[in-house]
Amino acid sequence: MMIDSILLFPYSITLLIRNALYRKGSKRVRKAEVPTICVGNITVGGTGKTPHTELILRMLAESERWHDAHVAMLSRGYKRKSRGFQRLLPDDNSLLGGDEPLQVCKKFPSVTVAVDKNRMEGCDFLVHPEKLRNSPKAKRCKHKDLPASDIIVLDDAYQYRKLGADLNIVLVDYSRPVTKDSLMPIGRLRDLPQRLYDADVVIVSKCPSYLMDDGREEMARTLGFCSYDQENCRARTSRGKEVTLLFTYTHYCESLPVYHETDNRYMYAQKVILFSGIAKDTPLVNYLSDRYKVVRHFTFPDHHKYKKADISSILSAVKHQPTAAVATTEKDAQRLLDYRAMPARLKERLFMVPIRAAFLSENEEMIFRSIIDNIRV
Image 1: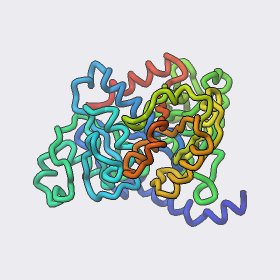
Image 2 (image 1 turned 60 degrees about the horizontal axis):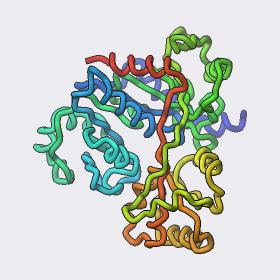
Image 3 (image 1 turned 45 degrees about the vertical axis):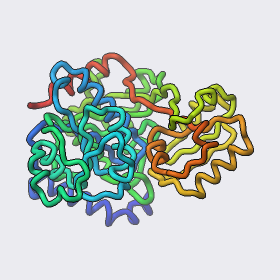
């Protein structure tokens, strides 16, 4: 640990100085003109931001206060090929806005899904669409017509300190708490672990669905909270600040065909070939192993762009296992649809496994709904 501290000192001191400047007001923080909800983390990927963003979008649609509002989601659009502000439509591809925003766009067609590296500019365009149409940046924008947004969900904007969200939600992977991790490149932290306590809501994601009360108490202590009231889901930091602490698990939904040509009969196969390009696919492997015999498993980097060699490797496995289905994640499916030369033999047996984030208790869900409903005007 001493060696880690020495090696990571330049990075950690830079983050400490940056954090101090924002805390003291030396660096200006601006607010959007409408309520904003930030869904972020402190680690590099793997905490389930997209399923939790979708959870919030569903709650907004069900909310008495927000169900008639124009809801928007704004993301950076990781690994997209476009530049500047872009609005996504369901028929677009992942190159325009990234795989996760496209996934959200397809599942929530009434939500305005947009990407912009400059989150402050992106929020301004979402609230005032006429500014986009009159801006020189409109030349690069494929879809310029959009409604004025009433509330914006910010995907992965916790480190974008220039924009102050009205509600900051930080996710922590149950199996890798930030207090037990190290800064990159030795660990997976991209921010100081104490930044956890600046959040309004901390959600411990990917928990075992059977996590008991003592397990929650232990996790609260592991995360550095001095006390945790399970009834009102409030945890207290050493400095006396109260944070809402909630726990979710991953619910795997029924498999869906990736292509129109996919034959549903393969869903009932006894064997499956699995491939994925996500941060952590162990839970998916475990889920599929309960239903199928996983005969081949291909692992690619997160947000991997599939190439001919990758598809050839998977197709070779299919030739050796002709009765097996082929499964991947919902996020991977968005990128696969960009691959125009997909062999028919893969198309006919390729399924995706959607996931949802769900709270461990009805009380937690009720508390979270109340927080979403009562965000400032």
